[in-house]
Image (tube, rainbow over all chains, first blue to last red; front, side):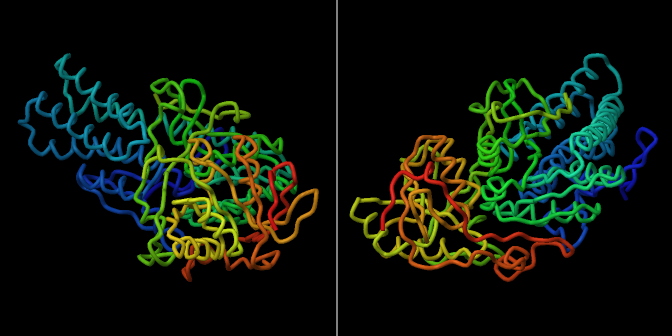
Length: 337
Length: 160
């Protein structure tokens, strides 16, 4: 099971399960089923790339969790081909290229190709240099993940430093553990802070995940409907907005869970600082170039397999929106390249 | 449905039948309807009234309005109000978001007298449960305002 406390800068940080929601043990990848939180903590065993693609498509994990699944899917594939050691390096490379294709096509808004391209690049390098492909690629992936983990932990500290005593912070959707862990640090440092978590329809990640993990970390959290943010801001109840991001552009624009754009516009209207956790990338120039996933409207129109409105009502469900860089007060980046 | 479809009116709130008749008279074929959490009554009522008049309701979550504005998919915003004067109006929660977005994107906001009086505050359980199912963890609080003040600077025209 995942280590729950982390030593960094001589201080221990309590870890949220959402901070590192997928881990490989022997030949199985265990993926935290975020759709079951807050009812229970359950990890889905994944043993093939096909199953890895399914957990991504079914949104069993999101954001950073998907990134973890993508990288670990290559380790799974390498383990699976490891059983047939006689496979030529070029044949292993082909399987990794196929793995990359399958993962790249799983969700359009996510820049999986940046990560999968890197892994395939390592495999090509191994073939060209005649070194052990499995060992070289596996070690590179593991080293890369370790580096990401350390940089995310550093960012947790930066988030905690950004939060001041007395702050009331509005957040949206879920920031994969980092905000909750920053809240924990703030509490250890004696800062009295408060969070508003938006519900985040239609999957309610704010209610199910963010409120859950903030509360678990001992933070003071209040749940609000997505449509209450205007009132909160107009009434001076929000000091800062802190959100995550799913994709960043060269010009600083970013895409995040649907609803982030209107929060950014409202924050600017009411002079509230807007902070975003980003993973910088130069692959996409501006937010206009990000393909936005339009999901099946039934996900919006039904809840627990029951329609939420009667009759021939249609739905429209864009999964993400784009926030132009001019709305951002400050980005808190980690470089995953 | 793609983001390239024609611009539509966005409806937020509980409207009098006259507002829907007006839509029909204007030849509106489709309209976006916001869910109106926590009760979803706005979604249900507006959808049924639209369907009765042969207008296609397209439901969106309350957090999707910004996307529509950013993609230039909004023709007008229609809000329902309970009380109004020259300084603004008391509207259902979520109206201020639409007002600010509309101002930013230079889209007109029309307000219509509501057919019902809404309570000012809901109960935490309204958010802790969705369609009867517990969705939030225990040990947290909820803030459930049901109406809000929309200043006149965000309103283009008022209809009784």
